[in-house]
Length: 184
Image 1 (cartoon, helix red, strand yellow):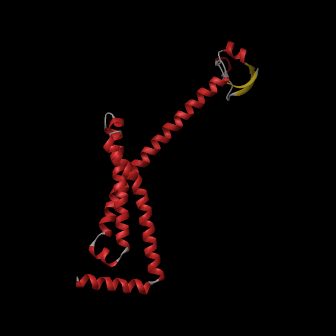
Image 2 (cartoon, rainbow, N blue to C red):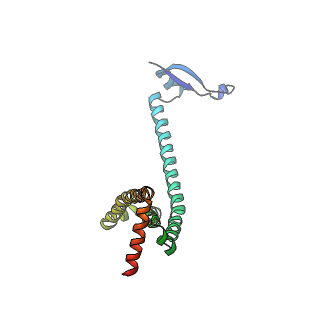
Image 3 (tube, rainbow, N blue to C red):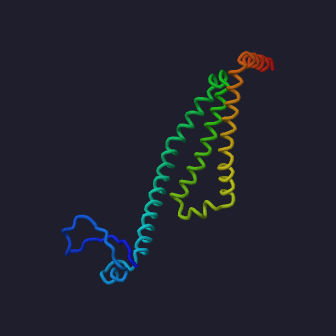
């Protein structure tokens, strides 16, 4: 069977500056010191390159996780503090939505931080992460936080739409609610 193989120069042919492709038979390759079959060589190199790609992707994922945690946790804490100030929350109803959104993101990031710390520092992370209580709490946080975020963004958008389409009614309802709260 004829196959196209890559020729690598030996000591006798050092003057060759680049690899040449030659057509050789498998039997000749075995006697000349090449790998037994090109299929095994290709499978081995493909497996090595896939392992390198997986290692690179895993390292990139870990770096992105750490950057998100380092920037996200303090940013969400500061955002929640700013939006929950009395003068900001009392004048702007959107501040409550944005503060709730920051707190929701903060809870999700703290859960991610806990998982990353367990993976990095715990001697047997699988045992710790597969604990029944820990697993169910983390599952609950991971499943509810994204949906809660969507609901907060939706309610914020609807509140802004109502404020834009019916500005006078929104103002009057705020005044009436403020007067009602003041009398009670």
